[in-house]
Amino acid sequence: MPQRSLHAAAVLLLLILKEQPSSPAPVNGSKWTYIGPDGEKSWSKKYPSCGGLLQSPIDLHSDILQYDASLVPLEFQGYNVSANEQFTLTNNGHSVKMNLPPGMHIQGLQSRYSATQLHLHWGDQNDPHGSEHTVGGEHFAAEVSGAARLAVGGLAPFHLASVQLHIVHYNSDLYPDVKTASNKSEGLAVLAVLIEMGSFNPSYDKIFSHLQDVKYKGQEVVIPGFNVEELLPERPNEYYRYKGSLTTPPCHPTVLWTVFRNPVQISQEQLLDLETALYCTQVDDPSPREMVKNFRQVQKFDERLVYVSFRQGEEMLFNFQSFPLPFKVQDLTSTGLSLGIVLWVVLAGVLGICIVLAVSIWLFKRRKSVPTVNLELELTYFSDFEDVESRLS
Image (tube, rainbow, N blue to C red; front, side, top):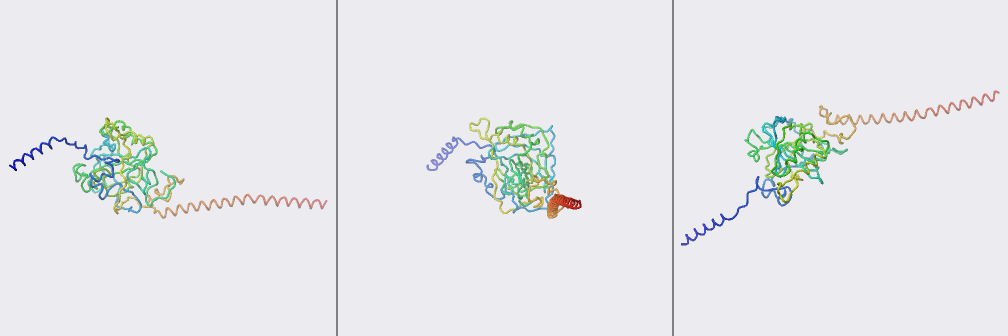
């Protein structure tokens, strides 16, 4: 009898549980945001890696930089996509994402890394500094063009950063797709482009001109192909390299980061479009939320090193972009001259100019004083001559 009672109770409990409504599984895994209850501070509760080691983004400061001569220029294969082909632009609720064809890949790393997508991070109208990586404590303290400023050893000239572009690749030599590679060793490689406010950028406008078509979460649009390499900065052979993580959940520490040293520019109008066009919520959501400040804060660096493909100190103490010289120091150092030689040449030139100016001023004063003396002599001469003539008469 007791056994039958227990069996009946168990059956009854199962029936009760079966009738209880179940919560729908969130789309794309657990819900997360950048602010609020599900914001960055809570990520590690659902995604343990977000509170672990090797996290990104980081601050790139001179104490952790080390030159590595083995860092060769990267080659970007298949980046020039014909306009006859198409990209899919999507609002995924966290950013605007553009899918990339697997034929796009990077050469110059230990394995072949094939492209999968690119996306952007930005701030808002009140605080437009939305890049994830910082340099010397600034949102690309050498990031998005400035007046004369002391340079942090080896860092780029001072800029005020606004946006950061990430181009995500996966190790296609070892793994069949990005989903498989995302939590595997050496699984991902991300190119990070720091973007400043400046002149209009027609290449970036090939993305920005379609933002209104993906205004709300879940919306997507097909856009013509273009040369994605045009989104990269000048001198892409100058970059920072370190091992880190995804900057969004699940924050897997499987990313080989390449952060380009030099920024690209977009106009103020283009930046404003990005800051105001998109929403994190769906079109019918009664409480729409603007897609702004979608960047993660800088993480602890855990005593790692960041390797750089350029020699530290190649910049002068001042930003020569705003200094009226007919050359830049980095142009000279890139030809093989050492920084010491360049400094001596510049100092010698400045000293020479000072000497020439001093001599010119001295000569000018001397010329100005000589005619006065001659005039006095001539007047004295004529005065004496008249006196002698009067005496003779």
